[in-house]
Length: 224
Image (cartoon, rainbow, N blue to C red; front, side, top):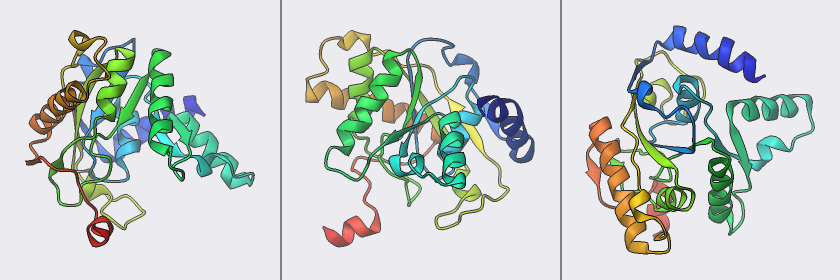
């Protein structure tokens, strides 16, 4: 399945959508790497692995991997081949489970993708990042590659299941090394400083307006 995705599906997708990819040559070929990206559409998690020069793991809902039907087993195998890691998001410890899954990938020398905003941006702006990305970088020694996804919200607008043809650009920034903060993962101030540096790098790549507050979806605002 991995062979099919990397050598058949990925070239086919690139031929159809013809994404413009910049900076991929600067992505470390080995060692733990965190790809920290802005998030504009559901299709983002498929775009990054298909254009990145090395396999990237993302989190996936655990229920996608547990179905015993023929379709369910195929979906599970497909997502596993794409690099998805199953995590149960339906309990109070979901956030900790997500970080643990990321650490497992990174400590094995792999690459892990994360959206520091925590959700898709519905207003097009880049919002304040959650500090989980900093915790992962500081606890594993992984470098962070900022990623800007441009145009994916036109490929798959909110509420649409079938991707459309639209120009897409993926920009990889220079790797960020936070080894100067070794041993300081427990400091909330350090985690915030690292996260803010990552978000600033993403903003410079994407050209988005930065908003120094967490993104709230309409349902969250109604409940507030």
